[in-house]
Length: 149
Length: 400
View 1 (spheres, helix red, strand yellow):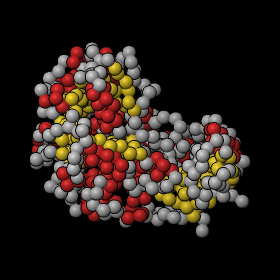
View 2 (cartoon, helix red, strand yellow):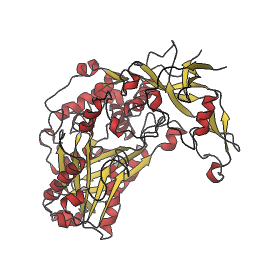
View 3 (cartoon, helix red, strand yellow):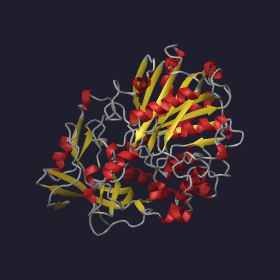
């Protein structure tokens, strides 16, 4: 069972960019599921939406489906933001922004939450799991990650 | 090695540069002024210009008028075509490739290619509202904005971090890129950082903005414009300025490597671009007298030094720390000071410096017997988690 955080207070940061193609992904997050795009023929996973690289594709990648992923991965690279480029992040610096290689293969990026944060930039490969951060007032859920053993 | 039939058949016949902060001017006026300077430098009149290409970070859209109010009208050019080309910092390279086809077919004798930015002035305005950096340039559609992925440094720094983790590259080694380029800038009166020298201690003591990047790993935010005139080698030879010949060009993209092969975090799409450009020009790496590499951040220089083969992959940090790319080194890199210390006009910064070096007009920083220069572009979409995908390589020469 993945962790869930419920955020309160007004949202004063940029909004997620949700459009027709990625709406199921954002609906999945609200239901606390990480959905990735998967080819029904070769079973390869993709994110964001795309045509399968291994197979001949149906029109508009019609053979692809959204499927629930494990929400597990490893840190591929990360940085530490010591500056708030946007005023909404003033109270959050320093924050760790990581590129995560999901166990299914695709890369995704997000910030890390929790007490256990990587300290040394050379230290990559740590296991992470998804944390769903609900923003009920705004009607979206953000995928964040935390380090696990 | 035999050259490609078109190698040396086109040349840059004029260059115009407007550098420094321009708080009271619009981009279109800066573009028009740089274009006027380039036409004058070539010994031409506006009526000689048959076509104009507007080099912008992003194609289409934007807040600058494209047709009715663009620089060709301001200058009264007699152009038969005008269009906007946009692909991050890969504009001069792509623009030249397009311009050649118009010249080759006799549609234009001379084409001007111009890029202008007022990033510094616009950043000052958004700073008042609590934003830092290039807020004005960010468009909708990036993945990571609500998560704090706000500027190029938010994800470009992963490339440095990844190189450090995989190859053991150190912050001090990255710092020597910034320090070396700052040293070059001290010999360039047009460089924003001329008169402001920097030591490795200055670098290490500069604040960490997006760790591992310090403030001094990050390129400048500039105002200004660069314009150049492209024509046939034959016409350029009867011009006022010393011609700079286009010997080879190559292009590569790492988008598939980025997303699916996870490979481009320690290299750029140099391999295909270099192979195409070098084989057209009939040159080898040893023929290159200096390199003007795209350097939005320090790690981009590190990657290119390795990817072009000046040293093996993973050994760039030590190679750079030994002083090889700084003044007095074995391969001068970014002799103007580059985007880090001169001005940030995308790949036009490196192009302008290449022209000056090949004409022998680079003053105190002139590379001796400079016959062949490579200059690169880099950029494209910044869809996080992502990087600029494109790499362009242009080989320019003093002789056709």
